[in-house]
Length: 64
Image (cartoon, rainbow, N blue to C red; front, top):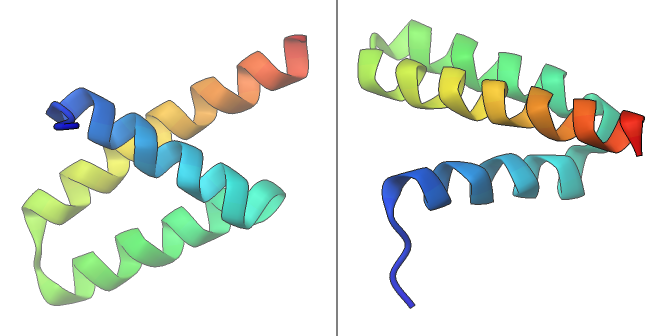
């Protein structure tokens, strides 16, 4: 099965939720800091999008 880019980003957000739970935002912040230190603008943009999806997951699980 081949995932499109949007599906890949959701998969990463779900992976973060499953593996880091409430510490997910801290994990994402670590990734953003690491990428910032490396000057990886594309990576930063990717993880910011993952963070948005992670937040959406968190909102959905708190309303259910």
